[in-house]
Amino acid sequence: MIPKDTRRTENSLVGVMQTLTEDVVSLFREHLTLFRVELKRDTAIAARYAFALAFFAIISLLGFALLNLAAILFAGWAFGLLGMAVSASVLCGIHLGFGLRAFAIVARRIQEDELGPRLAGNELERSRQWATKQVPNSQHTS
Image 1 (cartoon, one colour):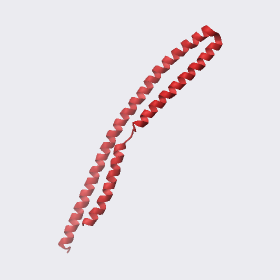
Image 2 (cartoon, rainbow, N blue to C red):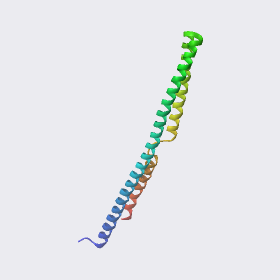
Image 3 (spheres, rainbow, N blue to C red):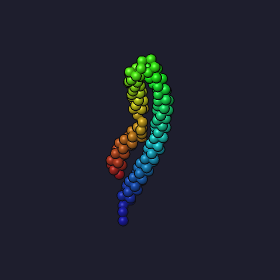
């Protein structure tokens, strides 16, 4: 027969382990919920950036194409074939510079927004630290 004190210790140890397990499961569920919320938010932000980039790239491409065509045709009318070549080269260089600068700005903004589950990662680390503190404490209390 098991002495009463030993049964109480086993019951309290089982109770502590059940509580700890339930708390860890609950915490894991909350982390998953937080992860999903962050992921949805960041996906929406990334989709807006992608749409804005595509939209403005198309508008810019059409506008630049028409501007380049007009400038090159004018240079051809005013200065001949050499004028057309020089104006085409200058316009390509200018547009390439502006395009690269615009993409650099958008890339920097995306990087500054730090997309991804930052909060969920931080919470998981805090929970891991909490759990490692709880396990030794529950063993010492029995």
